[in-house]
Length: 417
Image (cartoon, rainbow, N blue to C red):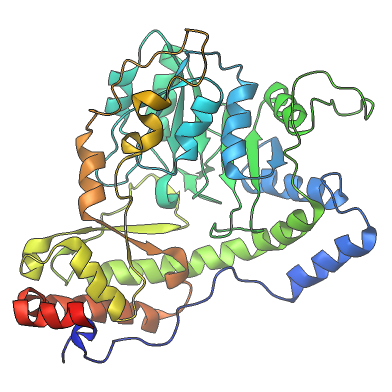
């Protein structure tokens, strides 16, 4: 059967499960806020959601905010990051992990990732620590918890703050303990594609009352809880979550355990079947991961099993078969234009200085995953085994006919179409 990219019928034409998912419960909660006329950040729904989110992650405090990028920023501000302080970050993550550091006039120091998990390599982090290092931001990439045992030990040994960027990891656990609570603070996102979403939104979880108070004050125009509306004690801004968002998120949290269980069943089925297919590798989880919500599934592509077809052409063929697989980031964060010399430093006080030359930096594992990585999004695994079988069938179909993609006559025909 000819590849769909070259004119044949695709493996799959029906859509995968839609995301975001919602039902009558979200509608009812939204109506409740609407009728209450308390729509803003001081709606009772916000406090109810914060308590539920703190409970889910075993934290004493959860402070909501307008998005996950701001969550990282306010966590850093609550730690009193000063101009020129270094913060170690991974280069494989959304840009906000690093730009939050720059917004606070800190210096991002990029450390390489673990090849299997795409999380910070503890050895690379240790090698990156200098007398100017103030904090480590560990991203739980794709929902797979980072090695928080090793990273927390490093932070304690060197007197550093550990922030967990858990934007992908709602409900994830490491050795039975929810992520977000291993360091000074954990940050979460509720952006439209996240595992619990209200379109936008974020939260900071912490076991420190002092840190929680600082985060809350910064998100609430410098106010203090219990003080007057027009009393402002520190410089802050309005980063509040609204009652409407909190209403939706409260229901989304209730859906999360069942959705996570569905993804886990389907990913394990996929993992088992994938072992029989050459050329596409899904690494095993670290055995210390006790709950993986599978926000992203990262596959590693081996072109030699596909007649030498490069990853991007393989993906075009797979997408033509109806599988919405995507390439990983096009390059590590440090290759973005914002890290060029003409864009830095972020201030003129003279204290900001990076010992890394971002323009010549090359971290091997981070570079490699940008070339051979493939992502499958979480909603693909919210259906049944037939959905998973279609993904597997499409991969095998492309592998079986990969040689035709290298035929110059067929390639020319495809380019004309």
